[in-house]
Amino acid sequence: MALQRLIASGIGRKLLVALTGLGLVGFLVTHVAGNMNLYLPAKDGQPAINTYADQLHHLPGFFFLELGLAVMFIAHILLTIGLVLSNRAAKGSRYAVNATKQERGGVLAGRTMAISGIVVLVFLVVHISDFRLQREAIEGAGGLEASLLAKLAVPWRAALYVVGSILVCFHMTHGVASAFRSLGIAHEKYTPMIEKTGYVLGIVIGLDFASIPVYALIQGGGA
Ligand code: HEM
Image (tube, rainbow, N blue to C red; front, top):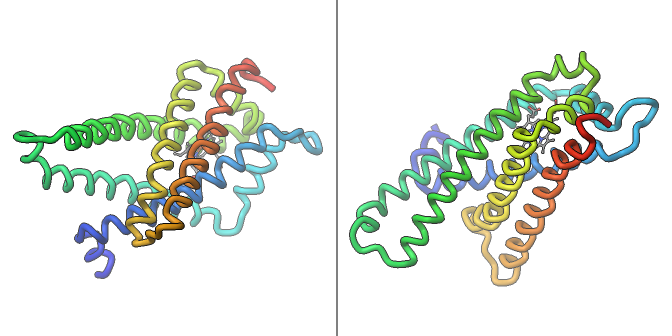
């Protein structure tokens, strides 16, 4: 099968990591924009974020959007781990013997990526079980705004959300440019522009996400 052949080849895996990564950037842009409804005034007695979530859940084909998102997340994570392991296997013996300063720097960057990857995974597991898996309970008990503010006012969770959001977006600042390179889109004039866009996007999205637990702490758990 074509997909099997793509996954089996190193270049194919790189392409899939790039495409799923860019898809996830699209998700994060819409997710953070939706979350910003928390700061909008209530309308017809309903917090703006509750109305937004309600409309989102009633979109036609919403189930398939969620399914596609889950497949994209899982594929991106597994393919990235596969790429890191095969790169490491290819370079392993050289590091052990005569590693240059640059190569040792690469090992350090790789370790930092591995640790931040684990923190992001812990964040995602906690996050999905906090909100996605509690959707019915949240709707039955005061709605999304009340639950967001109450959960994120718990200090350990607020800290995990701030660190998790910043790490995801730091990852994105590097990922956007490298995804375009993997797709073979490199141009003297446009590559620096793509790199800058990745940085700005990562910083803006990271700060917007991280502002939410800070806001919940300031509100003391209630609006
Ligand atoms: C502090 C920042 C964040 C807040 C307050 C937040 C809030 C939420 C809420 C309320 C939901 C449930 C929405 C619903 O029921 O439809 C949700 C779902 C989700 N969030 Fe976040 N989120 C944050 C950051 C992130 C980040 C950084 C990521 C990505 C790494 C992420 C990934 C997801 C995913 C994958 C879902 C499940 C989507 C679905 O299946 O419908 N979130 N988030």
